[in-house]
Image (tube, rainbow, N blue to C red; front, side, top):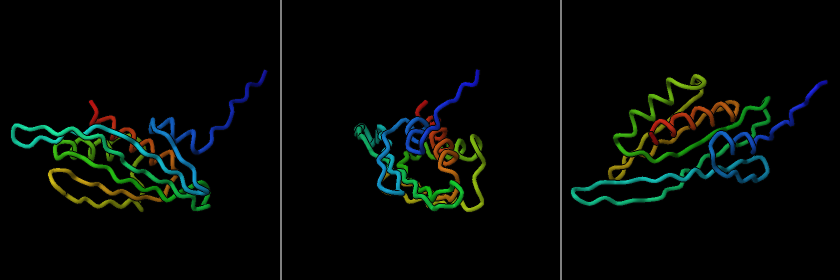
Length: 133
């Protein structure tokens, strides 16, 4: 007997991989990945819930999409996140670009690539899990 598995949609794949809700707006998929951030300044610790926005825009190129993410990281999280991003999951594509901005003891890491969305999402999910542990 042949057992057919249902084909998952891009939104379902992204939601499962990134463990966050996906909003679909035409050919644009928007994922809002929430995480807690604790910023220490002297004896004071400020706790924040932040939304990291990740977008996947359909390019109609054999499944490839324009993938973008802005991730806020503490200085001590940056090397762990970067190492996991580079060393685990699918290798970074040749068109991968990133920019790093420091603002008030928090780094904003902007990432962009043109590749299959599940590859970008898998790499990003692995890096985010590395800083959670």
